[in-house]
Length: 103
Image (cartoon, rainbow, N blue to C red):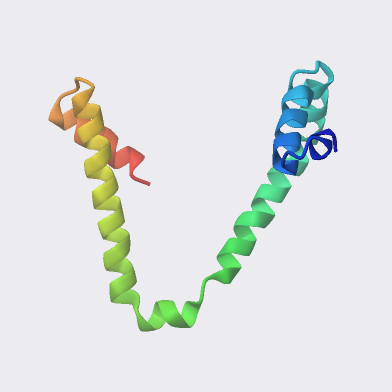
């Protein structure tokens, strides 16, 4: 509300309010007690995303979908491996770590 008085965005006000709340000692107690709700709501969110998937589209275009999934995993593996190799590991270690991080 205060940022609105200064003709600033409400998002900036929410950000500043979040910073103030995060710095309070009582926030840790609230976070600890609300953690089970966060876990449940995260599960509900992922369930709702899964319900959006159109299974008839997946059945009709399964070769393209599978090829795209493999392409994403291979590309992600190569990007991760290149970064890890740049950080000084061997190619063997880099590819192994890149494959583990690809998911």
